[in-house]
Length: 181
Image (tube, rainbow, N blue to C red):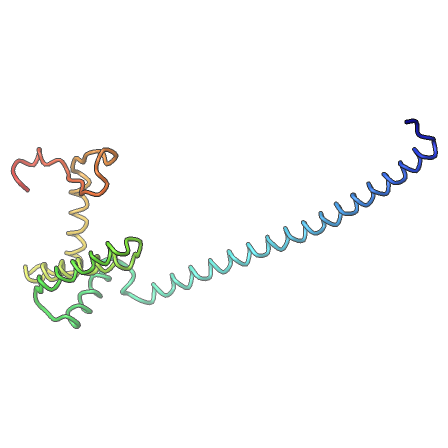
């Protein structure tokens, strides 16, 4: 099918108009995308400033609250609360009973960090009560006992976790300890 010169010219004009419209749309899209990029950058900047402000506020709050600065201060805060709320003395059965209750709650909601923290606080409660009854209580002494136990665990020989049953406790190698532990 041979087209006449006029038909070809008409097609070129139509194609040129379509091309100009497409270029115009691209230009509008680019301008719109530039605006979107600018808006996104502004949102990122606001987000960073908000996060930094929140972190600064949290840091300042912690500086003002001595009960959140260090592990010894947290242990001392827990000791005061526990002695005031649950009474003095060993209270071993009470602490163990409460730990068992919390362990059941962890089994029901293993991703609830607050249940795990309940066990940590109860363990701190038992630790300070034990140290106090032994005549060596101080929040520093309990902290030092935590560090000493962690250091001991780090120095032990442990089996590769990859080959262990993920539902069972992984015990350290006791053969070098000589005797039952």
